[in-house]
Image (tube, rainbow, N blue to C red; front, side, top):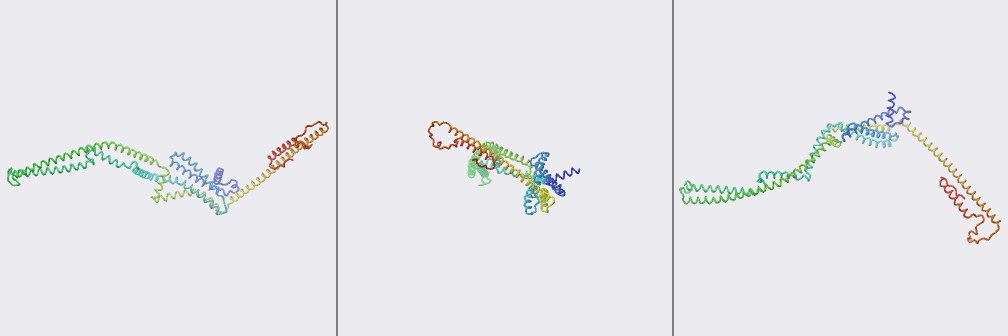
Length: 471
């Protein structure tokens, strides 16, 4: 058990960036690094839960797969936090400590906000789910109003009223058509004129009857002059009544014909308008249904953040709980960097001094080794140069030896020619050949010189040090 505990503490210390070789010399620093390693594991655990909740809310992934993805994200967060800790070496300068701490604290703050958001959403998920329903209903109403204002459906209310009016015209046989208003006014006027004529005729007829009975008028019964005049007036009124009846019938016939035409026109227009009304209504209903289906499935992180913000604005208690919980998770994420920063502001510990000594010693050893390697390399290069010089000198001696041999052979041949009997020679046409000395070998000497020059140049290219040209 003790061995297992020791391995666990060693692993936590290594996670916090401790050096095992220095901890063996300064074991008192182990507890500090073990605590830092535990804090790193805590932040990693929060990151695992946060990523699992975020993936499940955003994508609806099955919980085991969400946890696997969360483990990967937790490993990333632990690695980033460890990098922030390892990069904050102890420095005696307060200014340099602050310059190193500020960007790391900023990065840790961003990570804390990212990690705390899904956890906060998950803790308040019941309140958020209720608010999401209200937000979805509000979004549906907004979309419905947007469809009403759409140019495609702007004339839909007028079309509905027109269809209703056409149906009323068809149902009434055309009499409810607005085009018949003038004709119906004429019928009313004709009816009024006819009623007035009939009333006048009845009045005149009653007056004539009264003159006949003697109950009114002159008071003399019988068919006297007064009666004849009254009867003539009553009979003349009958013609007026007949004329009024004819006007009334004509007006009624006009209304009947107009109603028939209006009904025919309304029936013809009703079929087209009803088809257009049904098409627009169906299209609008399909768009609204598609939006409602998408809106009902919208339960991701964005709408949850919107719901949480709406709840925080409308409820002060909810806002306080939200911000305090978010600050708690952010503080946990900032804790490793803050602890390291506070330790750096304090005096240097034994561990820091030993680590610096070890680093300086490693640097000194490496510098000595590098210096020795350079000296060995230089000695090897000098040996190679000396060997190359010796080889070049031997080649030069060989070339000179061959040249001397050729000159000696040429001198012997010249002596032999001088001892031999002289034969007539052809005249020498080349003045330069005539002036050539006895010891000059001519083309042979030139060929040997060029060969020696090419050999020396090829040797010089392979050497790091220039070799003097051969004579």
